[in-house]
Structures are given as structure tokens and as C-alpha cells.
Amino acid sequence: MDDTGDIAKPDTTPRKQSRAARRQQLIEATIDTIAAQGYARTTLTDVARQAGISHGLVNFHFETKERLLNETLQYLAEEYRQNWTAALAAAGPSPAEQLDAMLRADFDPAICTKARLSAWCAFWGEAQCRPMYQALCGSNDDDYTRTIEEICAQLVAGDGGGGDPVRIARLLRITTEGVWLDMMTMTDPYDAAEAMRTTFTCAAAFFPRHFDENGLAGRRRSGVVRA
Amino acid sequence: MDDTGDIAKPDTTPRKQSRAARRQQLIEATIDTIAAQGYARTTLTDVARQAGISHGLVNFHFETKERLLNETLQYLAEEYRQNWTAALAAAGPSPAEQLDAMLRADFDPAICTKARLSAWCAFWGEAQCRPMYQALCGSNDDDYTRTIEEICAQLVAGDGGGGDPVRIARLLRITTEGVWLDMMTMTDPYDAAEAMRTTFTCAAAFFPRHFDENGLAGRRRSGVVRA
DNA sequence: TATGGATGAATGATCGTACATTCAGTAAGG
DNA sequence: CCTTACTGAATGTACGATCATTCATCCATA
Image (cartoon, rainbow over all chains, first blue to last red; front, side, top):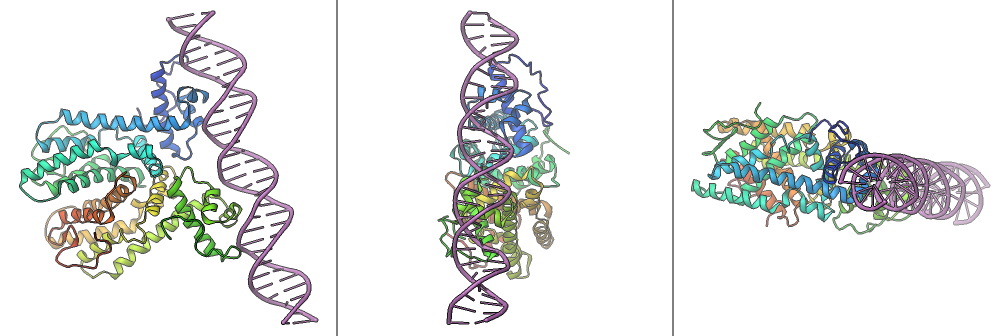
């Protein structure tokens, strides 16, 4: 959950811990370890130490290292999905409100932490040659893509203007990924607020009647992050 | 050089090969191996086999695996840099022509191959926890960033309009990275021509007087890639 | 044009180690 | 007591590094 990566803090009642809880704890430890050491250098011993338990236990809960890593990525993907679908459901009915909600969701502090971004990035790097990773990594979430494409199509139609909604949707998705990467890889990165403003600047370029650099235009919302 | 990764084809005159040539051959083999197996699974034996030589030789030319990987990334970074600076030098003097050249350069078939994109991506994934990689990976090329920011500043000033040139430059850089990633990670990706059109769609959104989806507007150039 | 030695590229067997996996054994619930 | 979580030592293996040895090529001398 947290970003700091302190070892086995959350009441890890050494003996006895429900199976599900231990598994989740190990997955979180895996995320933190990958973030700290990188994918290639992550060992089961590291993960176990991060979780504050013996390394034999990792194989007890997940039979192999490969499975642990697969499930970690699935966990991240599912978490991401939950986050944007929930945001979308909570948003108003107009396409502009929905787009605002989806773009904003990617910067929710619950999923937009340094450790999680690092882990995503690490899996991404390995995805090219592993079908399982590839299927779960960003650009292959059909549901996300189709949803944002539909919203863009509605906005384009509503404006009566031109522009290919598929390409605009792609640019918006890419922009989000891009600022994520920047926050991850830049030696001296800008903060999440500026990242979000950058994303909305892109939205504003295509839908100027609806968006400005702070999001949905003409309506001050309780922004998630704002500097 | 090529994308197919056939083993040790280019007249690898088994005995005797100048030091520099062997090193470059090994670096190319490293790129192909990383692309094929991923960073984490790349072994010196794989690289040697890919190059068609014994694995002892890899340590003979590069003392350690770490050095081989470092030099491979440096090679890619230098190649990338050469490519865009050359393109910029060959471009006309107007900021629009220069931006067109820089964006187009990223899709030059010499550097925009599947193997190279895969390798870039793999290094990127590991960059978060390795300062040396981090310094060489995309978003930290100060020269590139400053150049594209200056060009955007000129275009913004010339249009007499608003818009933060730094943020626009960032969006253009991010878009290029993004379509690269798409070509890499999508299970069913679009081609390089569509990738370039996507990039120029972004440029057109901010500089509509100068660009359309095919690049510099009102002037059909001998495009590098066009479907 | 031979001969022989020096240089350095190239090999592959060997070694040491790090790491995933296994397993025999221990301790809590229930 | 029986099930299930858990431990840590033991095992096997994959891999990076080392090194003695082989082999081309070049050059010096006759």
C-alpha cells in the first residue's frame, strides 16, 4: 500500500495469517522489491525479507517465482482496472465529464505511487517476449481503449468537427503513459500535478470547448491532486 | 544490423577480426538477444551464440556482463542522437521544417526496428534503479529536450498564440515514445506509417497552421515511411 | 622466399556462487 | 491430534568469470 517500503510493518502476526492476506502481503512486497532493485535483480529471498518472512514461505504460497510475478502483474492490472471503472461510474453522464474522470483516475494517489509505476515499468520492459505480460500491459486493455474511444467519438460528434476519435483516444492514452514514464525515469521529474496538467493540455488541444489545462473547463472540481 | 537475428551471418571470418568490429558485432548480438529473450533472461552464452562465437570471447572483449550491457545502451543512445542531429542539420531553417525533421527522424528505419525498440524498452524497464541506465534513457537527453523546446517556443511566438512551449515539447516527445511503445507492446499493433501520422496529429493540434497529419502542411516531402 | 618467434584473438573446460526449489521438521489453531 | 502455516538447512543448477591452451597473423632475420 505505502510507498516507503519499510519491512513487514503491517501487523504481520508472525504465526497464522489468512492465506489470502499473506498472498496479498507477498504481492505488495514483490512490487516494492521490483521497484527497489529492478525486475532482473529481484530474488525470492529479497521478496521474503521485504515481507519479513522466511523465503521458503514464498514457494509455499506461490509455487514458483514465475507464478508470483504473474500474479503480481495481474494484481496491478486488476487494481488499475477497478480504479478507472469506479471513477467512470461515479462521473456524470456527459462525455466530457466521463473523459475528465478517466484521465483523472490515472493520477489517483492509490495507484499512482512511485513503487507501482516502477513495477509497471519493469513488467513493461519484459513484456515484449512474454505473451502473458504482454496481454496484461497497458496498451492491450481492450476495454479501456474501447471506452475512451467511444467517449472521444461522442465528443468529436458533439463538436461537429473533424478529427479521428481513434487517434485522439490513442494520443490521450499515450500521453498518460508518457507522463507516467517521465515521473519514473527522469532524474529530475516534474510532479503529479504538472503531469495531470500536461495530460489535460492534450485533451484541451482536441476538445477546447470542454477542457483546459486543469481539466473539465468552467467547473472547478475537487481535484485529486493539485499543486 | 538486421532485424531477423540469424546467427553470425555477416562474414564473421572466424579467426581474426579487428577488435572494434568484434565489439560492435557483440553489441548488435546483445541487442538482438535482449529483444528476443528479454533483459532478465539474457545470458552471455546467448549473446555469444547469437554472434556465432564462444562465450569466453565476450568476457575477453568486455570484461564483465555489466560492461557489455552498459556499452550496448550507450551505443543505442549515441546512434539515436546521431540520427536526430543529422536530420536536424539537413532540415531547412524554419522552425516548422526543423520540428518536422526531428519528429520524422524517430521513424527512420535505421533506428526504428523491432529489435532496437525492444532493447530500448528493456533497458527502460531496468532504468529506475540503475543511475547509469537512467542517465541514458530517453527523457534525460537534455540536448534533445532543449532543442525541441526551443523550436516549439519559436513556433508559439510566430503564431502569436498562447500555449506553454515546454509542455507542448513534452507532449510531442511523449507521443513519439508512446507510439514506439505501442509498436512494441501491442499484440496487434498499427504500423510505422500510422505511428508517424499519430505523432503529426499531435503536432497539428498545437500548430495547425504548420502541420497536418502527414507532417509539414502544404509541402509534400519525400517521407521516410508512408503507407 | 623460408623460418621462427611474438602478439593477441579465440576456445572451451573448470570453478565459484547465487538463487530457485525441495523437504524434513516445528508450531499454532481448531 | 490433525490440519495448515511456517522455518531454515540442503540440493541442484544455471550462469558469470577465469585460465590454460590453440591458432592466425605479422614481422624480423637470414
